[in-house]
Length: 247
Length: 222
Image (cartoon, rainbow over all chains, first blue to last red):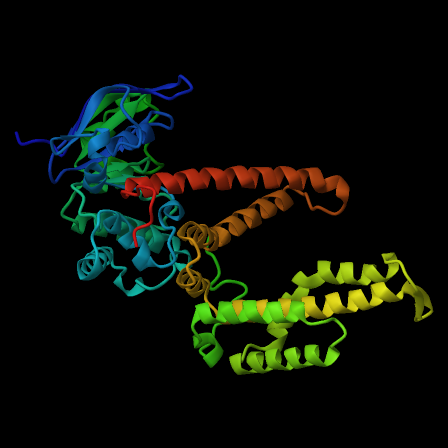
């Protein structure tokens, strides 16, 4: 098989206060896959995500992105390859206008002038926000801000898009619009979520992280219908939702 | 969750005053303030002249005078101090409305009031006619150090977020039957301020993480 886009091997990490969050995580994601990362609160999902672009440095084990190991010397290129969309768009959008915000990442990579402008507009077009390019981000609706946050990462032409709780706080229409956008993108996706119907809708494959280890990895349908696995790791389907009747 | 449109001090418009380059407006404001402060306090005619100039600018900007008047409440602490001066200052006394006040203090108080009012009005006029974003660009053009401009930009950006958070905390307090009415309630307000500070600090950390994730290396691209 080809080099995986994301290759996490035996990743372990303990926070400086001694709290061990990850105990040897193995995860491979291949080009074009859309993978959901499921798990209860405190399972280590966010800790894992922060390793993917080198914000946190592995205590043991390794992370590689398309063959390039995450090390201090590679950080700039790693952060181009791994685009993380954080949960709260207000954390991600901090410039005066949508244009400046989307341009922030590529400008850090040294892209300038007409090429920068072109990429900003292409990225905003992908999320349907090109008309808002000169607006201050804090004047947009929450759903629009989340879409702009996705654009701020797409503009770097990442190899993998990592989304932390993409559907949280969205109204059903915005949630569906974001799903349409994610489906339309030609990019590998790793999506951290508690929204199990959303995982089933968007991601053919799911990985379950619990207490710092991967305890399940397979087709999302199989994971969600494995009652024993679900119960053992505090995963619950929302009331009235049955994957068997959908998939 | 939604934040209102526009900043509270800015009055949207397209007048000549609005379109005037921001960095020149800042310079003019600075010059105006220096002249006002440097004018001897008994030259009342000069202050009248300044006020006329200012009123002409406000008229040209088409910002409604009531809009500015309402925002002049920021001057209240100065007014308080100015009113206090005649009573606490020493020297020859004089009678005003049957009250014995210090002559020296009275003149100082009037001068303080006049200068503060002119300054506040001029400052509000700048704020009302200049988008915060343009103001920052103007300051940058005036060669204010990058770091200072960036700090101000972050302040402008997160002002709404933090005031929104503060508002929600207040509503949550009131929903549990708490309204601050007297100083005995201040400890609760102090704890809320502390919580707000910590939340803002943590948000700062998260913003920094998000910036690092997009390749930030400690310098703004520009």
